[in-house]
Structures are given as C-alpha cells and as structure tokens.
Image (cartoon, rainbow, N blue to C red; front, top):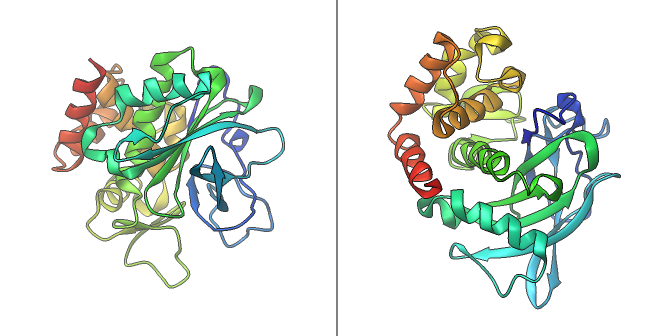
Length: 266
C-alpha cells in the first residue's frame, strides 16, 4: 500500500477489505476485529469473479466510504478490450509507463477506486487466479509522478511478497523470517532485509533516518519505500537509507528491475 504524504493521516487510514467470495490477500490494508487470525496490516480481499462487458473481472468489496469505479482485465501485459472509462484509461496510461515488461505477466487487473479524503493512493492484492490486482485512487490520477511512484512501491511488494518467496499464512510455522504480514522464506530478499534492518522485529533507525515516515511502519513497507526512493531518485537522507539501497542494488533480481523501470519512465 502507498499513501499520499499530503493527504495521509495515519497508517490506520488505509482500506479495510470485506468479503464476498473467493479469498485473496491484499497488501497494506487494515482488517476488522473479526479477522483476528490475520496480521494487522493484511486484509482478506475476498475477491469474487464477475463479468463486465464480456470480460472476467475480479470484484473486490471495499469497506464503507470506498467506491469502486471501474476495472480492466490485463492479459499478456495489455488491457482486454477497449477501455471506455476515462479514469481507467488515465490509470492505465500511467501503469503502462512504469510497470516493466519483465513483470507484466504478474499484472492481472487494474481497478480504479474513489477512496475519499483519507489518503490512499494505491494498493495491490493477490488475484484469486494468480498474479496481482492493482487498485489506484482516481483522486490522485492528475498527479502523474505520485501515481508512478506509488506503482513502483507496489511493484516492490509484487516481487518480495509473491507466493514463491512469501506466505501470508503462518499458522503452520515459518521457515524463514516472520514479519508483520507473514513469513518471508529463508534466503529471500525480504527475509534478508528484515534480518538486517529490522533485527528482532524492530527497525534499526529512527523514522527521520529512513526514506520517509511510512517506511518505519513495517519491514515490507520500508523495503518498498526504499526501492521507490532508489528508483525515483529521491535524495538519500542518511547512511541508513544508503545502506538499504546498497543491499537492493546488489540483489540480482531487483536491481535489473529498477533499471528497467527507470528506462520505461524516460
């Protein structure tokens, strides 16, 4: 999840997804008290499959105050059919400028929401059919750079919280490193990042020494904000940020991804 630094008020101001049918995990959302088995920063998106203009749409039921505007299914890296909704067209234009070709197979749907004044810009959650769904708040679409940086943040989640390297279910134990939202598999980038910069589950630096305040909320958000800072060229504010970027730049998977995103952004 990524929030707008101007509109954001607290981490608890993000989406709480409530359910209808097939379960799917959403990254960076709050949950109701009844979902006590799920970590605080993860929600059960409860995605159901529906149809819209003869296309299969995964319908996410959001909490009160969040309006689902429109969606487009992505197949083989491109939208299925014509995009009629102007907000979806605007969102896709920005997504297309950022989302790297090497990761297009992971993107299954782009959804546009209206979240209101609470400050959410974008969120990803796992699709019920594999891959990920990206939701973007239409209020922020005029701010192209903000949305681009938000998508970069969400791409970091896609890479480091995918099913091959991460599990949101820790009931059977964790063969790796347990973080706020689940289990990072042993040897994965998320596991190594958490071990190094969040020893014992606590961040190793004050919020002022990180990429931004939101980075101090959890290990996976720290990694995603650091990745965003690195790719987008934010000023390196401290040695703590520099050491985090150095670790990411040495990773054989995420380093070329960063270069591909920069090249695509132009």
